[in-house]
Length: 429
Ligand code: AMP
Ligand code: GLY
Image (cartoon, rainbow, N blue to C red):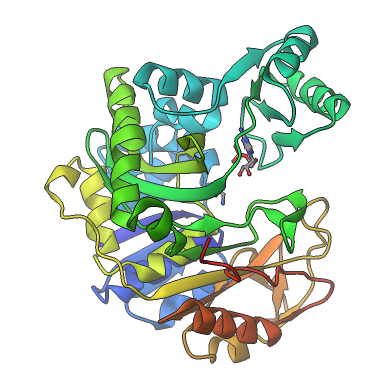
């Protein structure tokens, strides 16, 4: 199949690797891609990268039509919220990714709350605020710790969880300049990311993963886009009896009612429904929805997928998921550790050389995925963003997968960089 993958991160690199692993001779084009995706051209199919503005629907649709693209897979949220999937569907090009209206599930937290309330999807109590007075009343009504969220996309910076009321008010004041804010009940428990493929009507689940959002070991430091992940979650077996029982409950109470509610609104959700869940003592609660594959969770989930990714994505894009068997996953585990540039997340230093990637890739069971890289003028690899690389370790158990990932990480050098050393250290609770 000729497949266009939009995006430039480790998530898109993982999608490219999974498609090549099918050994189906796919012709892949990544726009804009990264240095790691370009280097995959040697394996299992063809890969090229093109410089294309992935958020320009008109350009992407024209490119796809001109290049006989059979499926477009949209990685990041920005093109979805910009309506790139709508532009492709208008030209009858199959696309895995929701249109602008359904992508509002991620693009507007107030919209997501309205859909959840209408569909009786379990989530934290929340109040909307458009003025500081409304926000202060909501903070007092919902109590501490305070959770304040910007309504729109804020590159992972829109959410503040704090016991400091003045900080909550200041955060709200900042984001009120851009739109409304949401004050939410604080939810306590374990977080789980669970992805569903959706075709507008039916959904099928992938395998759950855990994300590490804070910059530092022991969940300290600022929130980030995600510093690591693992899949599956062995502790779910104790808490829910089995992974399947947990997945079925989320499908019945969260994913399917949400997709059906959007269908009824005339905004069919076709693509990946990312359910960010908190497992509280009162049961499962939705913390957030995203309208795309999670990063870095995807890098832990896709290496375990045994079914054909291209068949699943095409079935979702063409309304045929109801006839697909559930995807199969390997019992092998995957651990992802993210290497971040100095200063990430506040002010990442970019342009520095990265060395040791080839030596890292030689560690058995390890794949190095590029998150923000380019080749410099002299052919050397340089970091171009905050999250530079991911190291993925795969093995029969977590001890071995972690050991492989951290051995590989120790072989990579990027001046001033940092990574968490506790990814998947505790997987039993
Ligand atoms: P979000 O961008 O909505 O995923 O929020 C970022 C992070 O803030 C989440 O992954 C949680 O760790 C935390 N968070 C968000 N909402 C809540 C909540 N209602 N209660 C507790 N923590 C939350
Ligand atoms: N890892 C969190 C996200 O993709 O939004």
